[in-house]
Image (cartoon, rainbow, N blue to C red; front, side, top):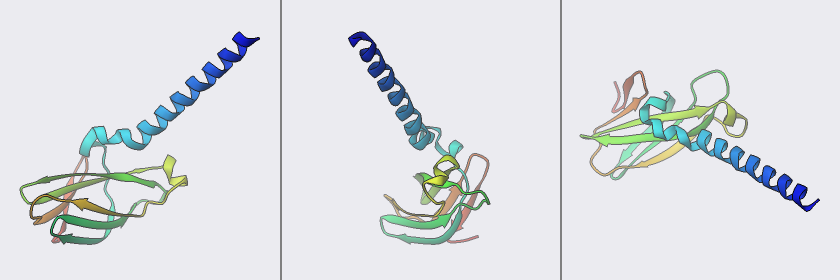
Length: 125
């Protein structure tokens, strides 16, 4: 009887650990893909100040997707930013976001970058 209870507890712990791993990979693992995993976003506000860029926006599609996060790189005065949304997490969160991205140098341009394209959002086209 003790062996059976021990096997049930071990099996349950293994299943819970696997579910946690799948959740964490789905929530944060996309960042390993860099801009290749990023999507475009609707941007409603851009504010560039010394040391940071503030962006507010939303998921531009029709189906509800939750905001997972952003990926950013700074190069030669340009801040490249990509966003990630998820249908699964859409039931827990909205696609609206407000992020503050710390920067090291002076930012002259802010560009949305995805796996397929990029476009400038600040100072504007």
